[in-house]
Length: 168
Image (cartoon, rainbow, N blue to C red; front, side, top):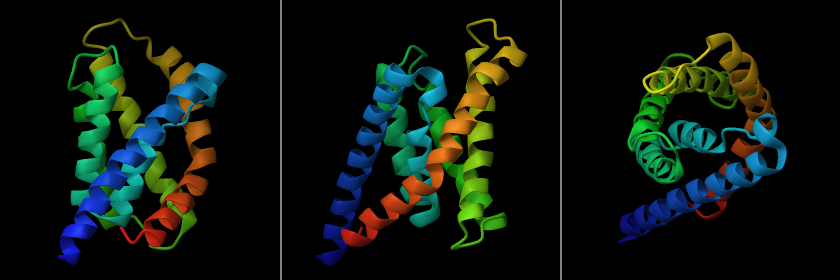
């Protein structure tokens, strides 16, 4: 019985974490533009990959992909694919590069996943539109990296506190 309660708590918390991250991204983008919008949904996926493992990050990526695809302009399934690949990439980096307890290591994992996220997003966007790589790097990737790296340690610490407090 206790295991089912933990799974229900985890499912509800996954949906809540992703929904709050989606709303925060929306508000930050509309307030500050692309320079002030960190990839919070991606950071939640990375956190869950580091904290719960591949199964947790897979479900978080699935929920995040469905939510972002529901409100995005890309064909449905684009962000679902990108987020699921990011979840598996987080697991791969966790097994080979991650040092538990190190803030710097968490930031490095987030950076590599963010870089791969940008590459996948750009490649999938190139299917439909003309993309200038130099402009994409300077006007999309650099603001994403800057704002996301500022937020990564704070967000991971807060999510960990919530997970410990509610025993999820």
